[in-house]
Each structure stands twice: as C-alpha cells, then as structure tokens.
Image (cartoon, rainbow, N blue to C red):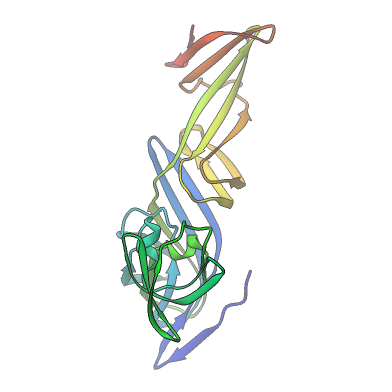
Length: 259
C-alpha cells in the first residue's frame, strides 16, 4: 500500500487517498464498479479528496459504505469521454512540424486549440489525438470524474470506504463448444470501451463466479473456460463440431441444449 499523508486543520482532516482494491460486479445487463479506499480519519468532521472515480462512471449519485462513520455530503466534478472537452484547463504539450507548444488549454474550436503559454496566448492547429498531444496526467486520469466528500466519524484511525456506482461498456455472456458430444463452457467478459483494466476483480453474480486480478485491455474480450458439472446450464450459444470440423450453431435455453 502506498504511503498516505494527512493534514489536520481546525479539527478537519484533509487527505488524498489511494485506491487499493477494485471490483466489477456483473449482473444481467448491468455492471457495478466498487472502488475501495483507505483513509486516516479524525473523530468528528473530515474533508476527504479529491478522489478520482473510474472514467466509465455514469451517475453522480454514489453509494458509500463505511463503518462507524457517515458521508454527509460531497462535491461531484463530472468529466466527459470527449477528449477535447477533457483538455480544457489542462496543461498539455503539442508537438508537430518540428515545433513544440506548452501551455494550459483555454478553448478548443473546430480545428484550433487556444493555449495560455509563458509567451502569451497562442492559437495552434488541433493535431490528431493522442499521437501529438501529451497531458501531464494520463488520459484516463484526465477523463475521470472527481469527488470531494465530508465524513462525520465516531472514532479516529484508519478506515476503509467502499464507493460503488454503475459503469457502462462492460458485459458478460456464456458460450459453449460441443465436439463429439462433449460440451465445454466459456465465460466471455467484454470490454467495449477505450479504457483498459490492469488488475481488477470481476464477480459474475448470476454464475456465482469470481475472477481475481483480471487484465482486460480496451475493446477486447476475455474468454475463460469454466466447469459446468452438476449445474444448470446458463443460456448461451453453442458452437457444434464433429471430429474438429465445424457443423453449425445451437443454443442452451432453460438449461437444455437445443440444436
């Protein structure tokens, strides 16, 4: 776990946390992101943040779970998956045509970016993103909504808080392969977004199946073989082979194989 630094001012604790465990819970047509963080809390009122949420967050109404404390209010700073909108107010570096421009983005209109630089305000052509633009923070970080929240704590010391919210673009399904009457099941996790997950736990609730520390690149599918012995077959498409030769497609419906 990374070190944490806190500052006490007038009975309040100001602290930026580090995410140390993330979980995606998948249900039918829905995905919930559970972000777990750890803080040092003072007894009484604590102001915490800013904390970055995942860029795929879709709601400003968040669910908080914390022992012996309560989140009484928070400031939600939304972001956008539109990269041009996310550059406003950011310090960037633009390279191209043997020249480099550094400054804070004031405005982006059509094919031009207005920058506040050390030499004054300049207007430069908008390059292709992200090959010619560098942001001080990663694009994922710049696209993340942020929250700063107030907690009233009954005790002082280390405390864990879970923040959960829906995310979009993550789905699951079951696929089968039948070869010479032997049926094999596969769980398919789809990431239909521009963001990669490097180490996230995934829990598929309808299957009661948990995957730990999953690497799921952007716009990809992770396919995992799983055991279906003594279980009702989940619905899904069946790819039918005979001696390794593809014959056709069937399906599993209501726990039964239909060819």
